[in-house]
Length: 112
Length: 114
Image (cartoon, rainbow over all chains, first blue to last red; front, side, top):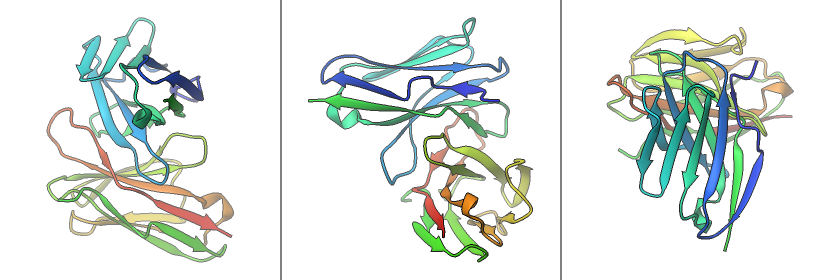
């Protein structure tokens, strides 16, 4: 049972435009959501997070939106840059152990 | 501190052999996690340590897998009698026990069982 889903395997956008990456979840007990970026042959790098009690968190070019009623979150990158090209993983935390449940990932390609 | 360090980066082994991976977390982090990632999937949780205590193990962690964190610092993950299905990227992450702090990942160990 996939509790965290990223239904778009890939996304291609033009440099300077907005990138929107989506994530759906099924478990309403998740209390914290995170986005990680992963380059080939490297481990995931933390990008941004949001608590379940909030609906928006912003950090520079990155904004995460959380819609609890829809069990949906999204990551907005504005403006997109070629260096943003990577695999993006959505992750959710279920309990205080801190273990994360990841989505399958979305490959973002930003074209110059 | 240079972050979470994992060794080796790559390991090729014959089916049936035992392998051991090492993870050195960020020094002040008392929580350590092991994940496994296969092609096209996100990382899947394997096990969790708080200091030297292994507090949770996933059902993915069969009897052939064992993890230790003897002094609450570095950790090892051993796979006995490897199978081709064990081929994956093994990721280690660490975090601190202080509210909502993110986990920091190492670069992973890529295991190929031939």
